[in-house]
Length: 167
Image 1: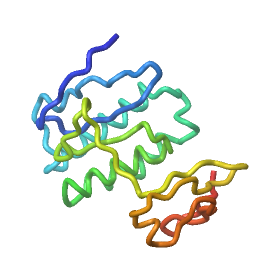
Image 2: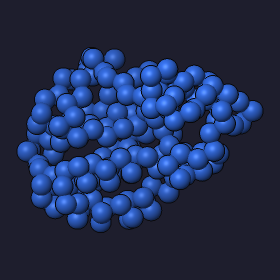
Image 3: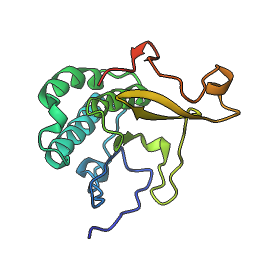
């Protein structure tokens, strides 16, 4: 069994790939070298390390059918030219988002993710798949979703102008 290393603010990114049993990825080599995403070279080093780590260690060797080389070709230039740390990590999240896997994430160092005390954010609803459709199963009473009129049993059709019914 691998040990969980407690990472400090020196870490430039953290990619968590949930495997059964849980395996934590090793500290990337550039973190120890003090690479900064403030520079183009640093952003490319972090992007490439994350991309390669996912390619090599992802639980599904087929990467859920995603053309991983195409993802790199499309997003690497955006990562290189990111104007801020927030913009860079948004590109990194787009990269991991292509996998459509809730267990693969990228965190910016300022997010100071504490592995032993995770925080969870929600939107005030729970959604379940019913007959292949995303259906609201619970709405938190004081949530923005409740104020917007969502109710248990509602079928989600669109989320931020994106079709929620896509598989």
